[in-house]
Image 1 (cartoon, rainbow, N blue to C red):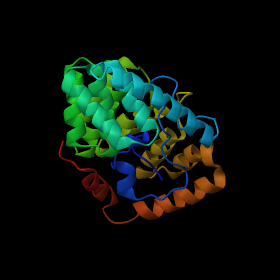
Image 2 (tube, one colour; image 1 turned 135 degrees about the vertical axis):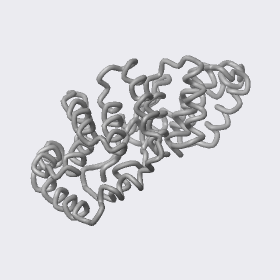
Image 3 (tube, one colour; image 1 turned 180 degrees about the vertical axis):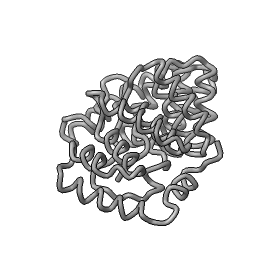
Amino acid sequence: MFHSVCLSRRLRIAALAATTALALAAGGCSQSRLKTGSLASPASEAPAGQQSAQNTEIADKWAAAYKRDPENPKTALGYAQALAATGRAREAAQVYSEALSHNPDNAELLAANGRRIARETPGPQAIAMLERADKAGTRDWSAYSALGASYDAIGRHKDAQDAYRKALALKPEEPAVLSNMGLSQALAGDIKAAETTLERASRNPSAEPTVRQNLALVYGLQGKFKEAEAELAKDIGAQQAQENVRYMRQMLSQNNSWDKIRQSGGSRG
């Protein structure tokens, strides 16, 4: 299935992909890598059991440090991210809440908590937290990308694109951010700009398959099905690409399909 944003699974916004209901077999969002300590990310090559044991061991170490000094923002951040890595999302949320009660203007905590909220429910609550991170002077590009994704989720596309520009100022040419920007431009009705931005993202050697999926979708919205098929075939092969584009044609041949996409994405911004 096509996904509109892929900064982390937590950041999947319902924007373009979900609104078109394209059940394509090109795969989903890859999970973002945790940055704290040496926690094994979901993309780790370690066996699942070994990865889980490693994360649990690290979480226990953070727990001990947090118990000694619960008001220390770096300790709280490490513990919260370790809890999240072991699937204890509610406990992580509580640690963030307690840490922010002691450190209300800590940019790292605000950004990390905002990203957490955006992963789960992009929208007003995530925006409020990430705007606080912005005011606190965060230098976390992924926080701005999460903010943009949350703006897009409620139709504030201009604000979303401003946030993506801030992310790109910190992480130039980051393909995940460019991909988000392109889909935001498409949702705002500027399909040509969307194509240009997504082609730029796709040319980056580090671009993930979802970037090419999004570009293929934007090609399809313009009737450029050969280009869409070629883009998909880079990751899933010619036969599967043909099947996906065939389904795309069927979806987009419905009456007023583009208007429905924009309305479903929310066009209030």
